[in-house]
Length: 435
Image (cartoon, rainbow, N blue to C red; front, side, top):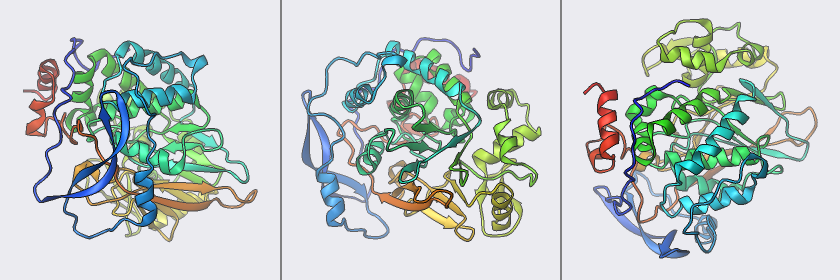
């Protein structure tokens, strides 16, 4: 296994009493949230701090009922960390126990988490770079966009769309980590569901499942504060093994970023790509190969309205693609729709390219500052051989607990990170940043 960072012990845990400071111009409003009274988890009315939005969006009665009836954890949270039962004994019960425990603000001990991560790598490594998902007639699948460590919003997704199961499968389309300060908890919870339901919880790689993004955007510092460098390297191995694409019912392509710039690339070419080898070669600066370029496009490219391919405003070797590129790729591969993520959208989604390209973004109130909703795309298989029906299910940000750590708290770009990073994590981060 490769060592990305020095093997130094990091033992200090983040302090639970560092709460979020309401941003300038914030106002109070009544909402429902999960709060702790000792070890009892109960639903209580609290004052919700949020930045004054640029537009008013009153809650409907339906959404008010949803907040009031939120059942994201059990009536009592265990004081003891749940013991990982092993892959053969995994079930939804353990995933829920783990969620309950992490909802208290506690950090799951690495000796337990490590065993889950090892099993998750084994499960993911057995999958193909392009995974095919079959939804039976009368069934559906939920496609989730970027969640970016917004752990508490993941529970809103499950509350409003149901827990993962054989009858309620999910595709999480990358960017599980970075920016949000509960990226560790988010990733571990998704891995628990993945091991519990390997065929019904699908995880795809996003551009933030990468060391070079994790350092500036917080995941590196978060892991080094909560765990050790060995844990960080294990998470990087998870990222290396994540599939890059999913095709649902031979009809819908789901990738994090966008389409290959090479018009000759077909689904079979994506499927044959050695994602682990390409990922590790990119870490050593070996880029410019056809495989590396396809890898970049699948994780980074964005749709735009001008035709053709153009250099992206993101910089580097990143491209944008127009409606003609989308049409050509879908027709060449007998597909009807591209679903991708990668970009924040005001309502959590956006249709483009003559309704052949759909962006889904699932991190509402992004980075504790953006006035956006989140969305989940539910694809329904209504008739055999017919295109899947698309249902957009938008949602709002979850209430945050009192112990909430704000977004970017572990990022070296944030001057306040010194208040959250452990001393050992700070030392390693300085080495990584060349300071």
